[in-house]
Length: 156
Image (cartoon, rainbow, N blue to C red):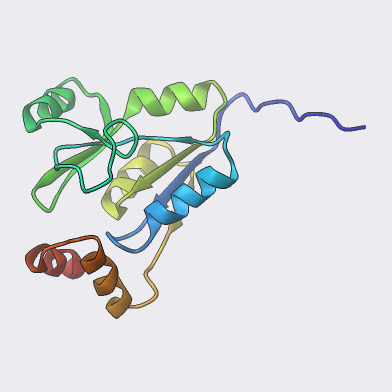
Protein backbone atom coordinates (compact mmCIF):
# COMPACT_ATOMS: atom_id res chain seq x y z
CA UNK A 1 0.00 0.00 0.00
CA UNK A 2 1.36 3.43 -0.96
CA UNK A 3 0.45 5.91 1.70
CA UNK A 4 1.41 9.53 1.59
CA UNK A 5 3.28 10.34 4.78
CA UNK A 6 1.57 12.82 7.05
CA UNK A 7 3.03 16.30 7.07
CA UNK A 8 5.07 17.04 10.17
CA UNK A 9 3.56 19.53 12.57
CA UNK A 10 6.69 21.67 12.29
CA UNK A 11 8.93 22.02 9.25
CA UNK A 12 12.61 21.15 9.07
CA UNK A 13 15.01 24.11 9.04
CA UNK A 14 18.15 23.66 6.91
CA UNK A 15 20.88 26.28 7.09
CA UNK A 16 23.48 26.31 4.31
CA UNK A 17 26.42 28.40 5.46
CA UNK A 18 29.69 29.27 3.75
CA UNK A 19 32.02 32.12 2.94
CA UNK A 20 31.08 34.20 -0.11
CA UNK A 21 31.77 32.28 -3.31
CA UNK A 22 32.04 28.82 -1.72
CA UNK A 23 28.88 27.50 -3.38
CA UNK A 24 26.10 27.72 -0.80
CA UNK A 25 23.69 29.41 -3.21
CA UNK A 26 24.38 26.88 -5.97
CA UNK A 27 23.84 23.98 -3.56
CA UNK A 28 20.68 25.57 -2.13
CA UNK A 29 19.26 26.07 -5.65
CA UNK A 30 19.94 22.43 -6.50
CA UNK A 31 18.17 21.26 -3.33
CA UNK A 32 15.19 23.46 -4.23
CA UNK A 33 15.18 22.04 -7.77
CA UNK A 34 15.29 18.45 -6.51
CA UNK A 35 12.74 18.99 -3.74
CA UNK A 36 10.12 21.47 -4.98
CA UNK A 37 8.18 21.38 -1.70
CA UNK A 38 11.12 22.88 0.21
CA UNK A 39 10.77 26.64 0.71
CA UNK A 40 13.53 29.25 0.51
CA UNK A 41 13.90 32.04 3.04
CA UNK A 42 14.58 35.21 1.04
CA UNK A 43 16.90 37.47 3.03
CA UNK A 44 16.78 41.25 3.11
CA UNK A 45 19.78 43.32 2.01
CA UNK A 46 20.82 46.89 1.37
CA UNK A 47 23.28 45.96 -1.36
CA UNK A 48 22.41 46.57 -5.00
CA UNK A 49 21.27 43.55 -7.05
CA UNK A 50 23.88 41.70 -9.08
CA UNK A 51 23.20 41.00 -12.74
CA UNK A 52 20.33 38.55 -13.04
CA UNK A 53 19.15 38.81 -9.43
CA UNK A 54 15.42 39.31 -8.91
CA UNK A 55 13.92 41.30 -6.04
CA UNK A 56 11.82 39.01 -3.85
CA UNK A 57 13.40 35.85 -5.28
CA UNK A 58 17.12 36.20 -4.59
CA UNK A 59 16.87 38.93 -1.94
CA UNK A 60 14.51 41.63 -0.80
CA UNK A 61 16.52 44.70 -1.86
CA UNK A 62 15.66 47.60 0.46
CA UNK A 63 17.16 50.92 1.52
CA UNK A 64 19.38 51.21 4.58
CA UNK A 65 16.70 53.35 6.24
CA UNK A 66 14.02 50.68 5.69
CA UNK A 67 16.43 47.99 6.94
CA UNK A 68 17.21 49.92 10.12
CA UNK A 69 13.49 50.44 10.76
CA UNK A 70 13.03 46.65 10.60
CA UNK A 71 15.89 46.22 13.08
CA UNK A 72 14.23 48.69 15.46
CA UNK A 73 10.94 46.76 15.23
CA UNK A 74 12.73 43.47 15.99
CA UNK A 75 11.75 41.88 12.67
CA UNK A 76 15.04 40.07 12.05
CA UNK A 77 16.02 36.83 13.75
CA UNK A 78 19.55 37.81 12.74
CA UNK A 79 21.22 40.61 10.85
CA UNK A 80 24.81 41.49 10.06
CA UNK A 81 26.81 44.16 8.34
CA UNK A 82 28.99 42.52 5.74
CA UNK A 83 31.35 44.41 3.44
CA UNK A 84 29.51 47.68 4.11
CA UNK A 85 26.04 46.26 3.37
CA UNK A 86 23.32 44.98 5.71
CA UNK A 87 21.80 41.49 5.48
CA UNK A 88 18.99 40.07 7.59
CA UNK A 89 16.60 37.14 7.95
CA UNK A 90 12.93 37.74 8.71
CA UNK A 91 11.77 35.96 11.85
CA UNK A 92 8.13 36.15 10.71
CA UNK A 93 8.86 34.50 7.35
CA UNK A 94 10.76 31.66 9.01
CA UNK A 95 8.10 31.07 11.64
CA UNK A 96 5.21 31.09 9.13
CA UNK A 97 6.84 28.40 6.99
CA UNK A 98 8.03 26.23 9.89
CA UNK A 99 4.79 26.46 11.88
CA UNK A 100 2.70 25.30 8.93
CA UNK A 101 5.02 22.31 8.48
CA UNK A 102 7.01 23.50 5.47
CA UNK A 103 10.67 22.59 5.22
CA UNK A 104 12.77 25.72 4.87
CA UNK A 105 16.27 26.35 3.59
CA UNK A 106 18.42 29.37 4.42
CA UNK A 107 21.46 30.43 2.44
CA UNK A 108 23.46 32.50 4.91
CA UNK A 109 26.96 33.57 5.86
CA UNK A 110 28.64 32.01 8.93
CA UNK A 111 27.99 34.83 11.44
CA UNK A 112 24.30 34.78 10.55
CA UNK A 113 24.20 30.99 10.92
CA UNK A 114 25.57 31.25 14.46
CA UNK A 115 22.82 33.74 15.36
CA UNK A 116 20.16 31.47 13.80
CA UNK A 117 21.46 28.55 15.87
CA UNK A 118 20.75 30.48 19.09
CA UNK A 119 17.07 30.79 18.17
CA UNK A 120 16.58 27.53 16.22
CA UNK A 121 18.99 24.99 17.75
CA UNK A 122 17.17 22.01 16.18
CA UNK A 123 17.96 23.12 12.63
CA UNK A 124 20.26 21.19 10.32
CA UNK A 125 23.41 23.29 9.89
CA UNK A 126 25.69 22.62 6.91
CA UNK A 127 28.97 24.50 6.49
CA UNK A 128 30.48 24.48 3.01
CA UNK A 129 34.12 25.13 2.17
CA UNK A 130 35.39 25.98 -1.32
CA UNK A 131 37.60 23.35 -2.99
CA UNK A 132 40.63 25.65 -2.66
CA UNK A 133 41.56 29.29 -2.16
CA UNK A 134 42.52 29.61 -5.83
CA UNK A 135 39.10 28.25 -6.90
CA UNK A 136 37.39 30.70 -4.56
CA UNK A 137 39.29 33.59 -6.22
CA UNK A 138 38.18 32.37 -9.66
CA UNK A 139 34.55 32.17 -8.53
CA UNK A 140 34.59 35.66 -7.05
CA UNK A 141 36.17 37.08 -10.21
CA UNK A 142 33.56 35.32 -12.41
CA UNK A 143 30.73 36.97 -10.56
CA UNK A 144 32.25 40.39 -11.13
CA UNK A 145 33.69 41.23 -7.72
CA UNK A 146 36.18 44.10 -7.77
CA UNK A 147 39.74 43.39 -6.65
CA UNK A 148 39.17 45.35 -3.41
CA UNK A 149 35.95 43.49 -2.55
CA UNK A 150 37.53 40.16 -3.45
CA UNK A 151 40.49 40.82 -1.15
CA UNK A 152 38.15 41.72 1.73
CA UNK A 153 36.12 38.55 1.18
CA UNK A 154 39.24 36.37 1.08
CA UNK A 155 40.51 37.84 4.36
CA UNK A 156 37.30 37.08 6.29
